[in-house]
Length: 101
Image (cartoon, rainbow, N blue to C red):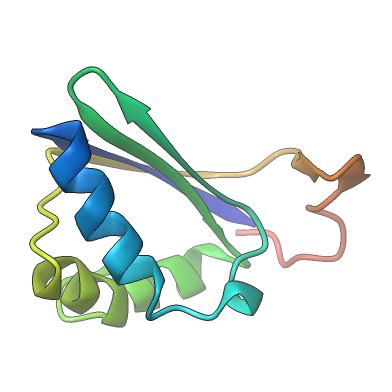
């Protein structure tokens, strides 16, 4: 499992509206672990992919997620990605059985 952390700076209300519009185009079943939070400066998103290769395929320039960001006017001010060592959600471990980077 691989995670990415995205920060978007600007009006939190406007960024939330754009983010929710983008999210409406992505099936909920695509998300193993995805979290978005409003910050005083904008929006913070934590997202996971099954592997580093899957992350690169989705998030590199020209990838499907970057196209959605552009379509909805979401321009990240920072982005980090890292291998996941442990993940939990709904009281269950989520990282078991996922490919390692």
